Image (cartoon, rainbow, N blue to C red; front, side, top):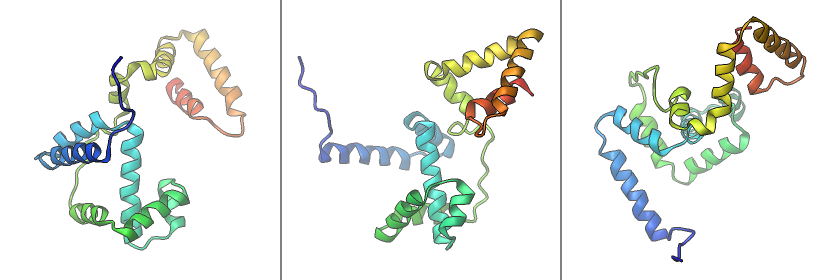
Length: 174
């Protein structure tokens, strides 16, 4: 059996990270960079990176923790980590914020990093329960739709509304 290392050495990691940086820096079009990053990052990773950039931007504009927390729904710990990175070095954050500051940046509605349907198509096995549920709701007859609405009525009485409840409500158009 082959001897497989469980971790990359710092040297290997450095080389791979440098290749990543080269690839990103050589993209001439934002769409190409988005394609690359979409393939590289999960939706949650892309969301967290975007939030960190927004936190850095807000901290640099001297917005307080509470305002940031309420606006983008992150923990005090996340804000503190970004603030610490800005204190220690933060050159990358500052450069990215300055580079995109006051620029008329047009975001396409179908931006691949943010489009959940594109992710579902790429990773259908991960989302199959949700996909199956959507299909059941779409093809439900009157009796089945009434039963789903009854279930939603029962779920609406719960104190906290789950993500599933909100999605079902939207799908059933209730």
